[in-house]
Length: 319
Image (tube, rainbow, N blue to C red):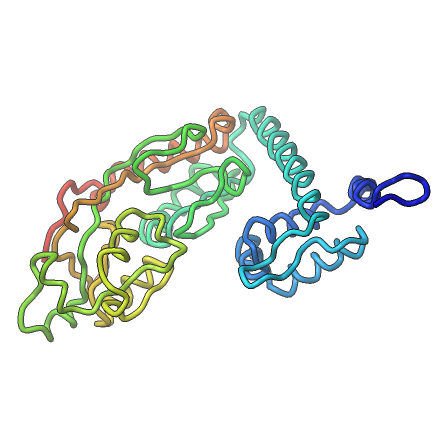
């Protein structure tokens, strides 16, 4: 539809979206579009649900257009929203490319490095290294994002990632630290209460299982687990490996966990069959590998973690 001057409504919307605006508003808008919900966007951005709602409403008011329809499956972009997504994605890509290009000029070991790692790796393996790293590199500030889901290094959600994966994406570069097999685990208290300790996968049919939430089922071992057993076999599901280990220690049931989950009260019974083993990698985007602060951080972490005996056991001791 066109007005008397011959400019379509979509055209007028495009003119409005091209006006100067707060880039943060577009970040919030894109997060809702990518996640499909306010809650998902809030979790991704690390802010409150109400903050996302307020920024989105402010953007819609400024543009004079509704950007989303709320459907049963989540927030779905309107035609105006789809146009906004296309332009905002291009703007986001351009900003990320500029950040990478500018960061690549920095050869000094100073500034902030954003590192992402799974919860157990961060608490059990990274945290003890921080004092030494600080002494060696006082000019570098570490920002550690703890998550069992993958951060997008292409979009500069993180500079470095400690990630368990069989094959890193082609656009990332890094070094393999070790292989991490997946184990069948239980709490010592739970095992003490059983007539017989499970010794094979077949034995698990009579034991309650601790399952994985859909958000971490991208992990092959967990995806297999959730498809191999009926829903009634699971006493609970969650999206945190640390919490799964804690539930096993508390006696809730049997958990499938990577071998790096080593803690008091958790017993590694036997490797999962079929065998699941993935590499633990230290990764960065190829455009950032020459940045001084990132290279210094990567070299330090690789040297320390590569020599950590807990990560280098080729065979996990069974209790």
